[in-house]
View 1 (tube, rainbow, N blue to C red):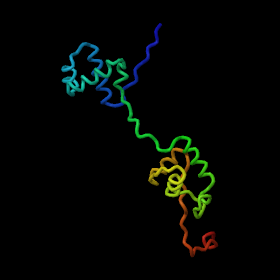
View 2 (view 1 turned 45 degrees about the horizontal axis):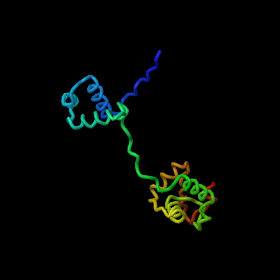
View 3 (view 1 turned 90 degrees about the vertical axis):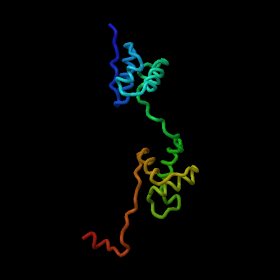
View 4 (view 1 turned 135 degrees about the vertical axis):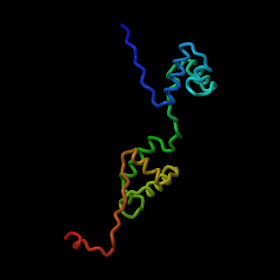
Length: 149
């Protein structure tokens, strides 16, 4: 008995349309008829058939996410950054032992020569499971005894 793998459903309607075009082509339909039936151009069908026909089959028609830019910090540098953060902000002559995104951006620029916007630094820190700490602002005239009562 042969076990056949069930194909996974299309990720979105565009992928489904490409897969349907391939199915119709396998059934012997002409490309212009497929284009008319699916409401696309004959050139689009031609590209899909060519991509699937190069040996990739229907998997070649699946959605592939864009790779995105190459990260400017390597995995090793991110580990080093976490070790730096563990030492504390005062080790880098910041007043108060609190890490904020602008402070971390400054340290990344100083240590690794990579310039990041503080908004992006917070995403990097979340990715490393590190939470950015924000200093609590308190009035200088504040009386702790009055607050406690």
